[in-house]
Amino acid sequence: MARAIMLQGTGSDVGKTVLVAGLCRVAKKRGLKVRPFKPQNMSNNAAVAEIPGDNNHGGGEIGRAQWLQAIACGVPPSVHMNPVLLKPQTDVGAQVIVQGKVFGEARARDYQALKGRLMDAVLESWGKVGEGADLVIVEGAGSPAEINLRSRDIANMGFATRADVPVVLVGDIDRGGVIASLAGTHLILPEEDRRMIVGYLINKFRGDVSLFDDGLRAIEKFTGWRCFGVVPWLRAAARLPSEDSVVLERLASGEARALKVAVPMLGRIANFDDLDPLKAEPQVEVVFVPPGKKLPADAGLVVIPGSKSTIGDLLKFRENGWDRDLAAHRKRGGHVVGICGGFQMLGRMVRDPDRIEGSVIEAEGLGLLDVETVMEPEKTVRNVSARSVPFGLPLEGYEIHLGRTTGPDTRRPSAIINGAEDGAISADGKVIGTYMHGLFGADGFRGKFLESLGIKGGGLDYRSEVERALDEVAAELETHLDCDAIFSLAR
Image (tube, rainbow, N blue to C red; front, top):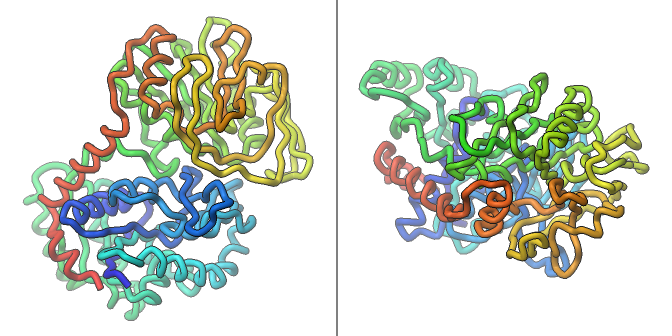
């Protein structure tokens, strides 16, 4: 097996994903064959990865975070980098993806009982990820301090103790209480778990780090752990794809720009990083609109993103009054793009006769496209190369969806994917639906699309921007962390 080190957090959203990606890039720059690994992830932001040895399958699902970390390592993403992915469908239930494929659905209580069976898959994938690697950097989930879940844990200390992987604990100083978070974690962990921790680091520090010297001494007094460094607020992280919808609660509108893009924050929003390339354009302002707020009247474009629960989110869309806002937007001549679940919502009707998503078997759509969708059990999961029909330009992206959409407007497809027509366009050309995620990542298409809206764009190489952001994060970590010490403790 390759040597390994694991980052766990004192809580969720402490920045583990970006830190692991940055450390992966540091290791790569040092000439190491490095791989990422996350035993269990919970996110509706999924990516399509290869399933090694399965030549008949289009691909499997992993968390978008591990897709980014694979990029940081300079290797293709594999389903074994994230063997268990939970995709929330309701407040108490989720779809369970194991090694890239749908395993089933489980309510939260049932899933706890299922974890013991899933550990075998986690350990199998762990063995495969380490093959041929010098170093594996593991990301935990949530916090090891959730001792009420410890007996069946597969994401933090349950995994670390089984695989004998040393742990670096990450504390987030930006949210406050970081001394108590680290000292409290030390206090309540059982001795077996506490022994796995080789030290800690502080993340998201703003200002003069010397002002926290007394804090570091206090943490050492309470825990005896060594500090690997204090990481400043990483501005480059904002240019990287976000892992899950937690970050949406903090997104705010930036300065006014030539084009405002409004994105309704669906309850089960999925793959909203489709909007990242638009956010990176200097003339474009992307505004995520929370429930209870109107879609802005000055938006030139509304994008309805993917959803893990199309019918449920469609019903909430109406409850929020966004259907009226969208109708008014169209009356003003505004443009609309629906991606995956958003595309399905734009039609006349969404039907779910097999109750795949839940108890509601049909819902009236928003009626901006003359199409209907029927949910079907078989899931499409594949990376694709395509061509935009309106602009005749190449596209690259991926599909992760249930359902088949038909109707008159599909005779005006938005793309040709593997020789087959995809999506639909309204008669006036201002409403576009597609099943393909990632279309805005195609620089040429994005530029022409923005030009069609009267905006100068297309000068940005988005993939290169992501690579530059990873390099900048790695440089910051080299400066502020003792990366040599962290890597030397891997075993």
